Length: 58
Image (cartoon, rainbow, N blue to C red; front, side, top):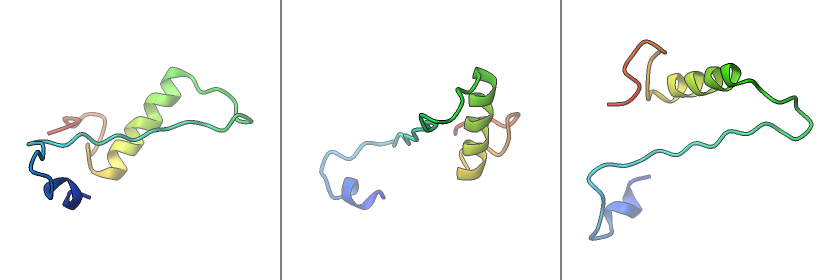
């Protein structure tokens, strides 16, 4: 994923990873606690943070 950015002469020193979550219109709304769980699980699965107690980002 970095190759196109590195080809540019203005490549940033650090990258920001954006991940968007939404539930389908027919799904029930999630509470803040449920969304926090979704985000914690995504961070764990992507390797950004191993668990809720680990430091979230380097």
